[in-house]
Image (tube, rainbow, N blue to C red; front, side, top):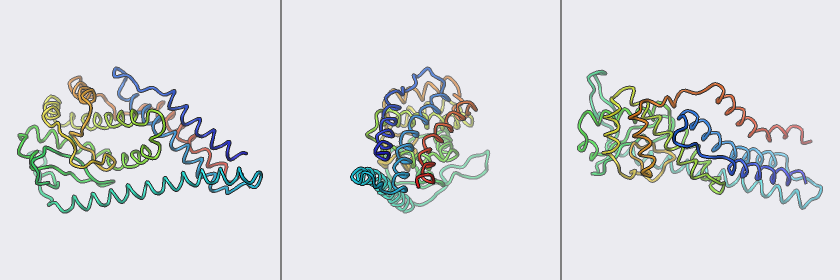
Length: 292
């Protein structure tokens, strides 16, 4: 019954850890919110995945046979579902990038400081939109409507925000996080944690931009550019004006007006706890060499 017990224990730990988790209130440090939310979001799916992989690698147990077949089928089904999901979103990412590359790459705006321009792809639409699209090496995509709607100062603020997404490679990391979200959407608080991560991602990019442009101008740009994203996929798109509840928008504006939240700076103690939790979530893999 060992394998079946492993599955039951993994499911109970994953569900229980989410039920006990709480979204940090708005007055909590941005840095603490980022690290605790990311850990709470990532650890349960990794633990489930590591457990399923370890059971599949160990194979069916013979005593009793029905238990071995049942536990192996459940674990293999979870692994197959995960593999199918990743293939699907990888295909979507490739398809989206090919679609974006049909648009011409232009110099979006020249800046006196650098003496050159900001390369990006321009979508000929009246919608007001800007985003980083892609994976590790994302590309800037803006709409013609954005270029005509904003003046030079506010456009520079939007581009600075997008450069923050590129610097932190948000599209790459949220591609994988988005996959975990879809795979374990049935876990408690998955959507709430995901929305919190999206908010923190935008606050971090705002912080990056606020070091390069006036934070008030950036806040004005945010209030001006409120529109739905051009592409309905958050896993490969980091958009300045992604559709969001009013509360999330208000928190971004408040963070800008109150000064940089230093979200990108990590606490060593929290980092150690975070990596320790991730290591524990992968611990079922260590049982494979000792199975036989």
